[in-house]
Length: 180
Image (cartoon, rainbow, N blue to C red; front, side, top):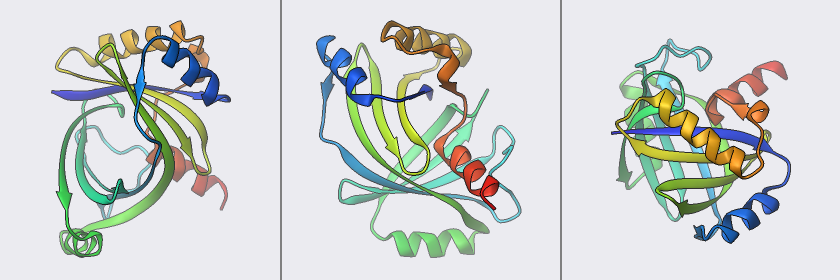
């Protein structure tokens, strides 16, 4: 199974939240997440080849998760495996010993909801803006699922023109590099 997602940049998250609530989307509490992205030392985050192992340390909800992401057909179509760890610092030390280095950090406030078998994330990403992300766990063709997810977002009044086909880590890397 893969996590397949689509994201759209938006101005007003409250408007989308209200539409989703009207559709009976159930939301949890907003959480703060800090993601540190690791790649092999010789790689840069721009144009990471499909199939490359990307590791993420995520702090949030009073726990730390280590996630292995391996992109399949595109950056938002990934096989993901996740485990809770006890110490971010020790894990960073282990990753360094294995030849990985931290490439970028992403901080965001996330409100997650569930509707129609989708996970919906309303994200306020520091330095990047506001996004709506819809995810589906599926073994189906990623392009087909991403089109389904995009149609769902369009039903909320969101525009295909605002679709973002990169992860927050890549967007942050690009933003940091363009500011130098």
